[in-house]
Length: 541
Image 1 (tube, rainbow, N blue to C red):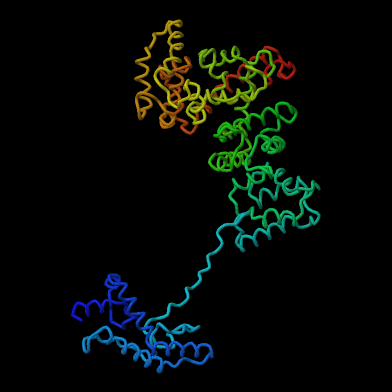
Image 2 (image 1 turned 180 degrees about the vertical axis):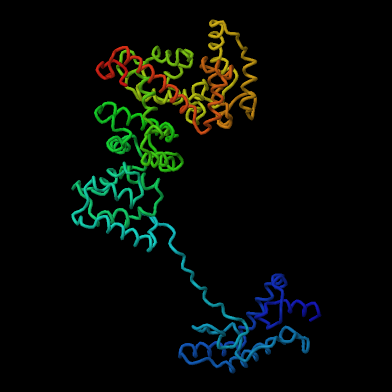
């Protein structure tokens, strides 16, 4: 056998030939020769005797004869080598301990080296790392310190009331322990008092609030859980009615309405419509927890609970805002059937709107009417309209009017679509002896205002990214606001700079409330009476 063959033998598996460090890549080059060598070693008589001896020792449970095994193994190995290597040409064996080959090693149940003394270390069992629970179906349980503190406070408030607290007494628990607005007290009370016994005991409250892990949830999730029906994953308008009833019954800023239940109901409806207009962005009437968390309703509720003047709570709850909306509806609803048709709506804002945009509104493209009467909008539909008309900078308003102008519904506003609506504006300017502005000029102005990604059309994304987007719609179908924008009233500009936090709707409602109040005062003076509730067909305020 030549030196090349010897070099090939040196590349076999180290456990077969007991060779020092051998590259695994070299072994892969001649796998068949390695197998042949291994099977030849197994066929030796000494190897068979060694295997039988080890099997008998294992069956009898006696300790293995390490020294004997080692000598037998070495003898078997040494006797097999001359069959492949010429005398004196075999590579030397690697140094081994007297414990024998690790191939026949019997694994010890304990940690440490094998009984054969092999230099190959046994891999110890991996340490099991306990991963703490991170998902809780009913919410994360409270820490012990928080739970103990809460239980102590519960014991204090329920002390002396072993039979439980009634609904009037429960408000303290809602405010001090649950940290929720007080006008949610009735809803929370009824959520716990499922048997309608009229009382909530200490144990029943602990089961719901502490054991149910309600105390560790964020306030939006708490309110959502309290108000929603058990079989639903969303809130409806009906779910907010108990909250508004308690607000009307308990808030000092709404006491004057207690003698007029009809207008209490109208106020509650208006607040709910406003909530769903701004919060329920999908427009399906199902307010999800995600929508609730992304909106500002929770902050408005907390503000209403702390502020005695309800008119300072501009978001949703202001009575003055309700007054403006309701009176505007009352002015247009000439027959007072609580429905508005096209001819009624065209009079809005002193005939500010074009016929074409009114047609689009009544085609129910931006929003399906809730009224049952064909071709007429109800009070809820009007609330959505007036919020969209007077606050065009808000995202729900931009979406409302975008759908109106997008005639083919392809998600973009082209020059032809905008020109279709502007033609009527141009005609009205000519009739009013105003200097007409050609559409080509006004289109360049709108592009400069919006700076769209593609100047050949506007997308909803383009409009939502601009501060002057609302004026685009005024240019297309509201002549009064278009002319006001062109003249740039310095008084209005100064007002906006003085109160940058106020929205367009806030400013409009404030101006209109003052105007309506002055008109009402004038009517009172001319009638010689301060009572305006006698005439059923007169504006109700």
